[in-house]
Amino acid sequence: MLQAIMEKPGCIKFNNIKKPKPKKNEVLIKVIRIGICGSDIHVFQGNHPYTKYPIIQGHEIYGKVAEMGPTAKNFSIDDQVTVMPQLFCKSCYNCRIGRYNICSSLKVMGFQINGAAQEYFIITDELLIKLNNKLSPEEYTLIEPIAVAVHAIRRGGNVKGKNILIFGAGTIGNLVGQVVKTMGAKTVLSCDINDYKLNIAKKCGVDFTINSKKDNLEEAIPKYFGENKADLIFECVGYEETISQAISNARSGTTIVVVGIFSKKVKIDFGLIQDRELKVSGTLMYVKDDYLKALELAEDGKLSLKELISKTYPFIRFNDAYQFIEEQKDSVMKIIMTID
Image (cartoon, rainbow, N blue to C red; front, top):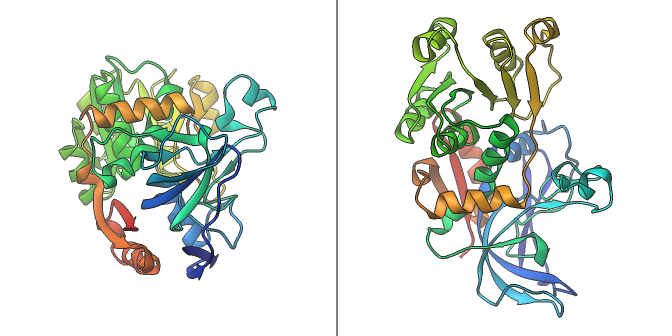
């Protein structure tokens, strides 16, 4: 079977190895689709702060059960599945209280341990999520980023009737906007400097958009939200400029949820955080309930997913996919690799 190994930033090579055999409660997955996300791009560029090389990428996955270990349960051959790509210790404090997404020794597939960018992939049964044959393979590949959005929103608290400001109209920012609308948000304003992504956000249901490079954000916030401004802010970019904008434009007492991955250390104004009693909350990945909620929203048709898929590439053209992303970065949302 083929596996794609990123030997160093910008360099993916393919190995042909023997198909693995599942043991104990392991399941062998025939990988069919692999999504490329912003974190993967950071790895390709050599900018991800928590990844070492060589590494096999792949954490946004759609596949089918090909073989089961002797003690694996709850699945059958040919079941459609996706994967929760996180390994946790089960014994540290956070694991014991159910917050295994922030396990003290957390390892994420495609970053700290090898992922699913290979024709077959071994995973334990407890990390599999069964799918219900209601969506396309490409749409099912998006369950993982939807779960990221669901968890981030839960970190922010109840959004019903709230005014929501989102920095970043990429895939995660878009999905945060879509999910908060399904949860009853009153008004959603998406902020970015990319008109292409803002237009997709509008097509996917956000109420208003603003290009902060062209228009005045400070004036736009009361225009769309009224004098009370935003009730909750999501930073989905990971840049110093956007987190600074979030802090400076926050109403006193507002919560800011930091979703974007920062590849560089940033300087922020803690004076404003203290003076305005702002709550800045991090969010990392998800737990199983977030995955199940993401699947429910997707399969119930409450999310616009096809609009997010920019292009598909055959697995063997992994390098070409990244080259396309580099060349067309201003007009790309989600790239998906196909293994048929």
